[in-house]
Amino acid sequence: MNKYFPSVLLCLFISGCENREAPVYQRLKKKGINILAAVQNLTVQEKHLQDSKDTSSYALGADLGENLKKQYVELDYDAFLTGLKFGYDKDDDPLLTNEERKDAFQKLQASIRSKQQEGFADNLQAAEAFLVENKTINPDVQETPTRLQYRVIREGTGQSPTTMDQVRVHYEGRLLDGTIFDSSYEKDEPAVFRLNRVIKGWIEGLQLMKEGAEFEFFIHPNLGFGQRGNQDVPPNSAVVFKVELLKVFEKNIK
Image (cartoon, rainbow, N blue to C red):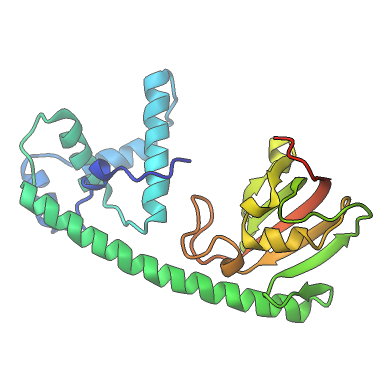
């Protein structure tokens, strides 16, 4: 999934169209345009992707939709599609002046920042609560002084890595709701990397393992993806990794 957020498309969002009495909706109505009805009609029709234009258009829409959702943007579809059509075709009079668009965009950015901060705080609270409960109800879960929690699924008998070693591992990463966000099993190929180039929870955790071991790690955001998160992990989220340490390499192999 792309990490970028196309600002030119974001500008098409019109925050003043949250109800049917909004100015933009009324302007559309006067023009005899009912975009909302068109959207509703489209949703009940089966859409087949017949050529490369269909496929790329759908891919762009799906990617943009996922990014908008992650950015806490609430869309009004009729206004959004009207703005999209205007921006692409330029075949009609604009419903907003450049100044009005700029003002709408600034208000949207402020709304996004506010909702993000609320979401970040909620995620951190959920992470803290999960780790406290996890340690309490699971007697086989151990915790290090840094608050890294782990469970030994299978002990190993081989070598333990240092931070400068390369390792070959199989792994699966999950969010607290069970969503798998990364998996070498799904790629059908183990990962190879130098241990000092991954998140802190992995750096510490894999040094507790020996070749052949399988552990489950419960990682606080401070030891994971932190306040920034990544394209698949929301900011301030605890994550759970199942890791098999297959091989330790003292010399780089890649």
